[in-house]
Image 1 (cartoon, rainbow, N blue to C red):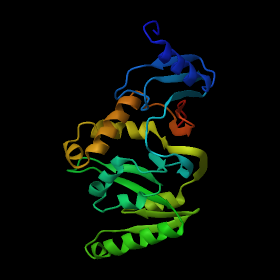
Image 2: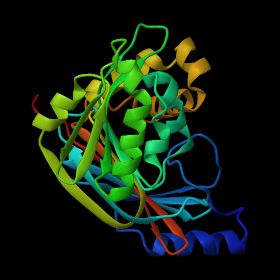
Image 3: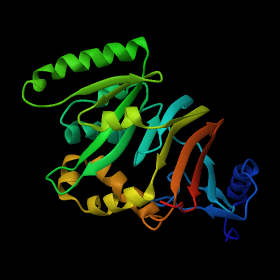
Image 4: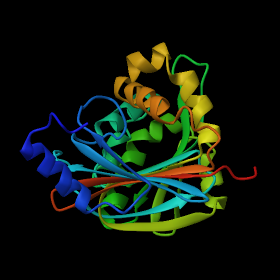
Length: 267
């Protein structure tokens, strides 16, 4: 497939392959688009198949201006989707409309979102989720200011819940906070990562299918809507997988995306 490539392109592909783990197959993708993996092209992917996992490790040149630094997260085991990040992606600004509160500013400097369910079948789908922030002085001040701004809403039946656990400040607008407090969490850390996520496909894929053509979501939250469609395209056929974990790291000028797909577990 590389016979029409220039010598320079072949050299780039070879350099990207050098830092990949050995695997059962090597995949080279030259064309960009909304296909997996969501990194630059050319991308080179090593596919490893074990008795319990399918691991895809993809390398590409770093073309993003988004910085990468140390990333720490706590992953709740019962959440449908947990997304941790050092710099919030643009799509999270759409949460302001879905949650009915201006929460995106709380994510400046990083944080995590744990989604336990999504209320569909309404004009706007509503994530039942917990926002987790590092419990440092600046985040406490930001959260206190946010709580003051929404205090009047408490008088009209909007329930804002807060808590603290394992070095995290927690915020929810429903009873998801109780689920998070009772949940088992696993600590994870990377020296240079932009984001990491964990999902349960058997719960998430049916929700993505319902939201794939949701008109309200498309109008009110176009960035999240496109992310939903992309994610549905990438994992729609993996509903029976036990779990999917992914992390986007940076090593010099090479961006690496590693995705681990666990075999189905007894549920």
